[in-house]
Amino acid sequence: MTTRSQRIDAVRALARVSRLLEHASGELSLSHYRVLAAVADGDERASRVARRLALGKPAISASVEALCRRGLLAREGVAGDQRASALRLTNAGKRALTEVETALLARLDAVLKHTQDRRALVTALANLGEALDGLADERLAQAAR
Image (cartoon, rainbow, N blue to C red; front, top):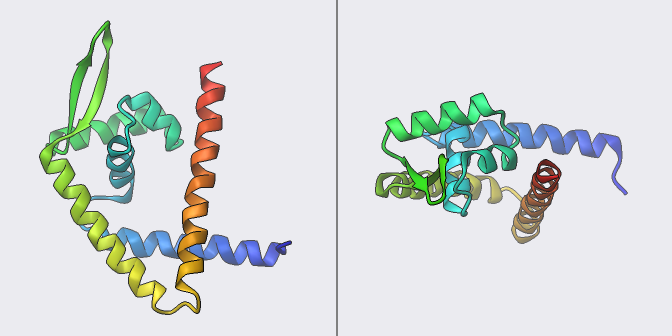
């Protein structure tokens, strides 16, 4: 059982990590990174990316538009649905994603050097990612109803 104080410490640490990663992401904001990563993970529709990332329609539309203008994302038509478009990473988008992830990993590694149990922390963060995926899946299932 964790105490409220421990959970607050965890929230504060996550907020600090977010800022640390934002600095490492260079010209690509973390919000744009999350969109590119979601598309790279197989989410093709902007509406699905929005629900997975808990973004509103205006926010995802602005991000997708900005990423398309920068040549990092492309929109393609969806067979059988004239109104829908699928998103895909361009070659430049793939390169940008790889570059940002390399920088983010370097920043994470710098933090991990200061932990007592690097493996346990990485495992805990991966488990947090899985929990966030589960939460997103719940939101997607509710939206489908």
